[in-house]
Length: 89
Image 1 (tube, rainbow, N blue to C red):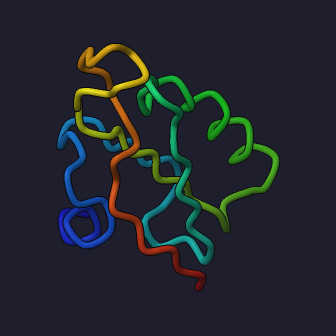
Image 2: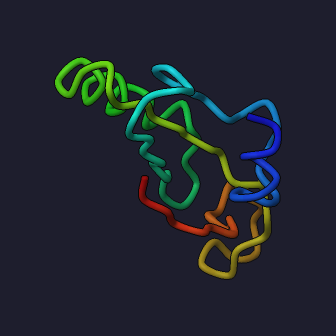
């Protein structure tokens, strides 16, 4: 998972990458939170999808780093400033 974090997520918060399901699942889905959210916010969605879709899927939920965002008058918030390379198995 460490290599995956560095390669695909760049500047995530290390402690905030949640993985649901097996890292060896045939299909891995990355779910991204919205502005000001965290991985914890979308965890119920991933758990629901995992129950519905089964063990052939796993879900990765990264939390973006905290950066200042103009939309919130320069307030520091979690923002999807993630460097993402989307891939399909």
